[in-house]
Amino acid sequence: MLPITLNNSMWVLQLLPDAAILWFCNILLLLGTVITVLGFFVQRIPLLYQYQLPFRIAGIVLLTAGVYFRGGYAVEMTWRERVTELEKQLAVAEAKSAEVNTVIQNRVVYRDRVIQKEGQTLIEYVDREVVKTIPAQCDRLPPELIDVHNRAANINRVVDELKNKDAK
Amino acid sequence: MKAVAVAVILLLAGCATPVPVKQTWPEAPTVLMEQCPQLKQLGADQGTLRDLLMVVIENYAAYYHCAGRTQSWQEWYRQQQKIFTEANK
Image (cartoon, rainbow over all chains, first blue to last red; front, side, top):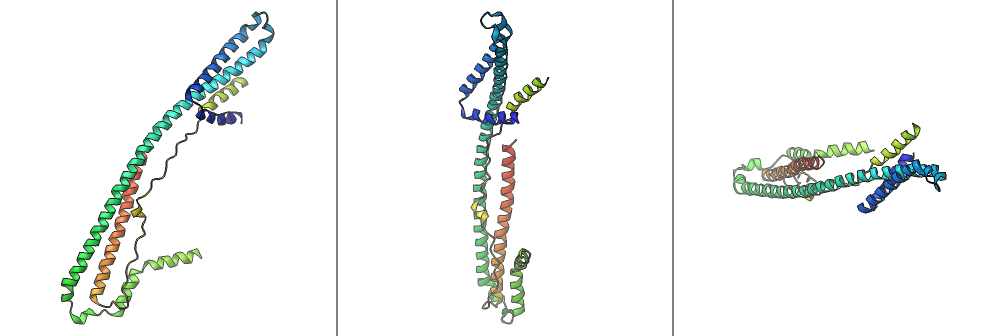
């Protein structure tokens, strides 16, 4: 539970300037090292010999915290570099994506225009040439043929009906 | 020994950091978001062979209109997948 709590506090590093974090970590590490070393020799200093245990405890705590935050800082910097790199890659990807969209959009619009024009040309051709070739007795369509054509054109209605039935 | 284990766990806990990068879903071209049209039917007043031909031509055009969009969706997907893969290498 404790490591998770400490790990959750690492997000604070993202809010601080790089130099401030580095200074804090280095001072903590240096202070921890100095006090830990002092803890081993403090019994030889006349006025401080009685504080040997507090010195050792404080030194080890500060040293541990210093190592922890220095490690956290190194990892944080590595991640920041990766994040910057990834953000650059994503920006390039977004630009490429927009470019692809433009190309596809233009292609679809052009294709639609060609299809519409070809359809119009065919309709004009039918009116100009084909109508003349249709014998009068064949011109009227039987109602059954129209019905079958319309049912075929509307064949997707069956799927919609099935979907509605399933929904009920 | 226990103290060393606790210290190692504490020190290694600093090595896990979440990555605050969000990748947004690419927007599709607006033209691809259009619905395919319904096929036309012959009306009650359209009983000649010419009318049938007109409706058939329009329906074929509608099919190719829609087929073009489907092909473009596939093309869009392939291109976006390629871009996504390259960005996440």
